[in-house]
Image (cartoon, rainbow, N blue to C red; front, side):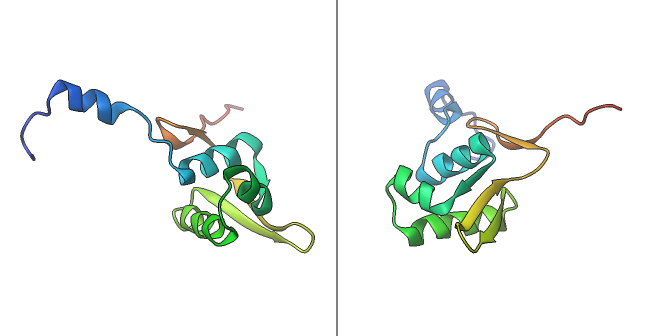
Length: 98
């Protein structure tokens, strides 16, 4: 398929945003700036282990930060200076001019 043009109907399909569980987790973190892992587990109805696995994958790719609290446990935080859009993914916000 390299070097070949793609059929128009395929391009339209691939242009749509995918909404997997990990996408929903990432969207939730960026919508709230900070989310407890236990809230993710409840909302997405997934096992603790799966939520932690996805969080670690996102942190390994530097899309979120993970903090630990003695009271709340694992807390997922959005990256400062970044935003999330389902079609664009995580992107840098424009810097404010001083």
